[in-house]
Each structure stands twice: as C-alpha cells, then as structure tokens.
Image 1 (cartoon, helix red, strand yellow):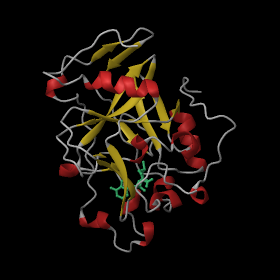
Image 2: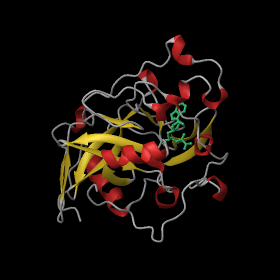
Image 3: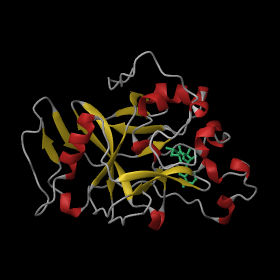
Image 4: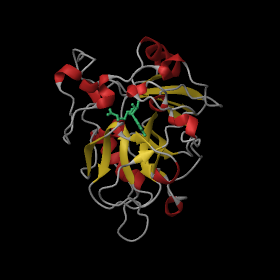
Length: 267
Ligand SMILES: C[S@@+](CC[C@H](N)C(=O)[O-])C[C@H]1O[C@@H](n2cnc3c(N)ncnc32)[C@H](O)[C@@H]1O
C-alpha cells in the first residue's frame, strides 16, 4: 500500500508510483498489444499516445545470480535473460519460462537503437529486490513499437545464417550498438524518484548498465558462443496479436508444479 502520492505536474501521476502498483499486482498496463514483426518476431506496440517519462512495462522474471544465469545460458540460450549489476551485485532476470511469465509483455519488447529507441530499462528497488522497469525516453505515438537498447555489442540476429539471412548487415555498419546511458526518467521526473511503501521501499536508482542475453559487467562482454546460436522457435513467434500467444507446441519449457514467481534473492 502506498503511503504517499506524488505527482509530476498537474494531473500526471508519478511513473514510479504507477510502476510500483502494477508490479505489486504483477500486471501490465492495458495500453499495449503484441504485434508480429517480420524478422524479429513478436514486439510490443503502444495503443495510446505515451509521454516521455511514463512507466511502460516491467521486465518480469525469476531473479537469480548472474552466475546462475550464465550457467542456464550455457545449457540453453533463451533470449529472455536480462543481466545487470545493481549495488555491487550481478543479477539475471530470467523471463524464459512462458508458463510463468508468458502473460507479461515486458519480456517481448524488442531491441532498438539510435532514433528508433524510445524506452530504457531502469532498475528500481522494491521490497529489497531489484526490478526492471521499462520507461519511455521520448513521447511515443499510438501504434509505435516500444524499443529499448539491449546493450549488447553484437546482435545475434544480425549474424550471417541467423534466420537464414545470407547478408550480414553488421558488415554494412548497421549494428553499432550504443551502450545504455546512465539516465533518469526524464527531466520532469528528476528529484521525484522516491516512492515510499508501508512494507518496503521503492527507490529509484540511476540506471546501471544491463544487457539482454549477456552477463553484464563493467565492460560489456565480448560475444560468446551462445550469441551465435541459431534462432529459437520462440524468436519467430506466432502470427497473432493476443497475449500469451505461444501455442503449446512452441513451448520449450514445461510448467513447474506451481506457478509461484520466485522473486527471492539470487541463489
Ligand atoms: C526478449 S525477446 C523479444 C521478443 C521476441 N521478439 C519474441 O518474439 O519472443 C529477444 C529476442 O527478440 C529478437 N529481437 C529483438 N529485437 C530484435 C531486432 N531489433 N531485430 C531482430 N530480432 C530482434 C531476438 O531474437 C531476440 O533474441
């Protein structure tokens, strides 16, 4: 339960407070849909105009140590593991499990860079655990795909043979990846990042670098064998716009006995 309401301008709720409420309920805001894109599978599209600084979606997942995340990547690369450092600890948010996280849209946001990038990941502490929230870095028009920079140096889908593409776009200089900048929620949010809760605290932090599919470190790691892996079935995604779009045959992970989402500290 939030004890204090803070607003960012007239009529604008504090995005971090909004994010905390959705996180608490483990739900997404309603104004996003899944769309299938050629060459990149499913992606997330805004269904209404969004203002810079708004909370968009939470990147869900099982919070584990980066070491555990790397072990899982070695066993099977999934494209749904987000590695990041926070307060001196290395973590991985593993959103691979479709059964547990398939209805959360934050895991389906695709990579964008340069001008197309319109969101960023932000690490927030809530009840002593870091959460990854996707925040708009510019105004996003209705119908636009939400994109944030994954922060990886080499993008596997740009590689030769990935998805049967013969041409390696990287060689044409199209894969320069900008590292995620440290940032805030946008100028209107500066100084208003703290949201108090009765049972814990939600504290905004300047973003630390995080990467999807790589372990994050002080320097972004060079590509590993798993980066060159072939596309998974999930990468192609089903041709529907509905949530939870994977048909049973596409699931590579069987449901655990319970669907409890493990938000415990890293093992
Ligand atoms: C977190 S998932 C995003 C959702 C994914 N598109 C899907 O259909 O499940 C990350 C994967 O999406 C694909 N992807 C993300 N951004 C992409 C881009 N800009 N171009 C091509 N593929 C992309 C890659 O296969 C990547 O491993």
